[in-house]
Length: 119
Image (cartoon, rainbow, N blue to C red; front, side, top):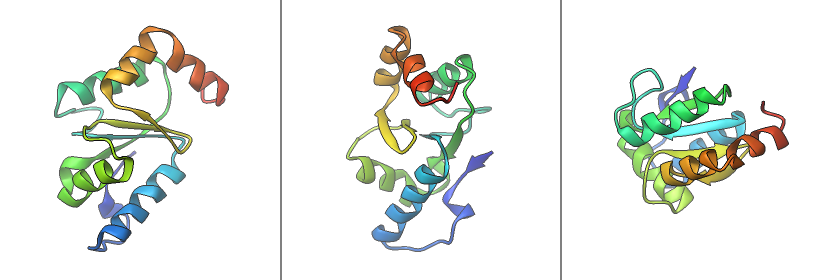
């Protein structure tokens, strides 16, 4: 299931955006903030990360940041990371496309999922 902030109570100030983001991360073992959806990614970087996660056969929740400008900026502020997509595993920020791709190519991402008992 794909999540957007519309699934949560809408509040306008930054503190509540951060709370909503934290709730999404806490409620989902693997949470990917991306542009578009896994079925229809809206950028190549988001497509790359979703393809990696699908290849590893992990169940993940996606959050389409294009549906809410406050969310799009809010996730960048939340993580202090300037780009999207952003991957969180069991509440921990992993990184964006380059980091996820590098970890995947080295076999490290699969090990993280195994250690956290997600595959």
